[in-house]
Amino acid sequence: MVWDYPHAFALPVVPQGEDIDGLNHTNNAVYVRWCETVAWAHSEALGLSLADYRRLDRAMAIRRGEYDYLLPSVLDERLTLATWLIASDGKLTMERRFQLVRDRDQATIMRGRWNLVCIELSTGRARRMPAEFCQVYLAATVSPALALAGSTQLQAPPQVHGASQAGRANGQGSR
Image (cartoon, rainbow, N blue to C red; front, side):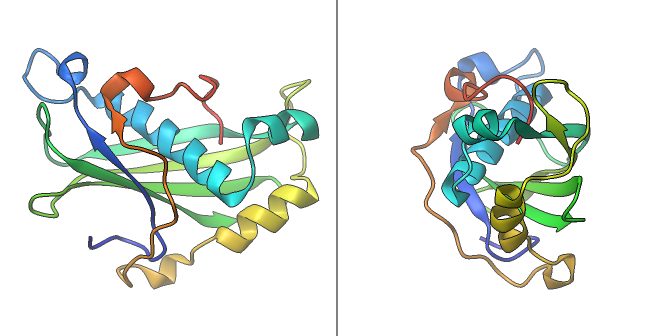
């Protein structure tokens, strides 16, 4: 795959019947759920799970999400969704990017961006990232200057089929 950034963490996804809307293509909300799924899988592959977030009383919560829907996808079409951490101040904020590619022709279907802020789970207030977050997430950050430099995929869990598995990690909208 030709990715926007190197060192992609990627999951295969395939739209299922419940993902298709009245226009006969994948509903945009499905892409958002898939982004949550791949973000959690990436975090877990790096070594930070929901259990770690709870133990540390911290989470990376979505402050802003942006999605550019470039092309439609249809029922049973094989796609690959990749994610990267591309920026962090090492204190409160991080940026995560997404790219959804159609496997058959390598066309980019969607690009997304999350601006994340570290919060204290017990209060919901912004708090400094714990050392464990900095060690794991900063080490995984890819410089935007490396765009289009290729990718190396980390291990990913089994294929996500539509809404049946998307977003099941916690439903809280944080990574």
